[in-house]
Length: 176
Image 1 (cartoon, rainbow, N blue to C red):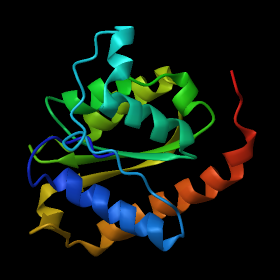
Image 2: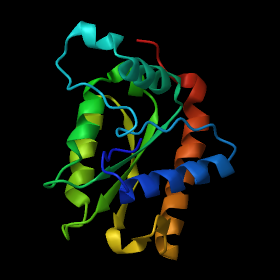
Image 3: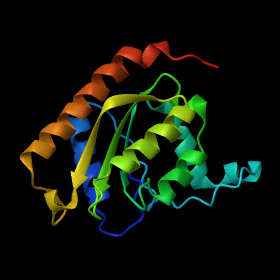
């Protein structure tokens, strides 16, 4: 998931890099981008489930074996657009599925608070959030490319872990 609604966002660059890494593992990737799939503001209203973007989000989340969720850090938390998307989902979308989390920090606060915020929300959705996480400093993304080799290694390690655990748990998810 790309949790940034900004045009030209570094978070989108990171999400696309992760998509390529997953494809290199032979994994089919459905990238939900909050900018491309503008969701209504979550109101808990059943009628919102008729929105085509909400239906698409539900479909790919149910079919997913695992998630990697990327967010910019806004005011010490995940983006509002990402939180809104997560509010449309439930434990049936995340139960027994591994989730990797990535924060893109641009304001000098380091991204850790956004990761902690994501962990709390994802725990409420019964997601299996991996202990490893990645923070991306804006200095490591230039002209739509990741330029730091250590960052690339860290993202690759997260992808490796998600693929391995996702495959191991694929058939073991509960149905309740």
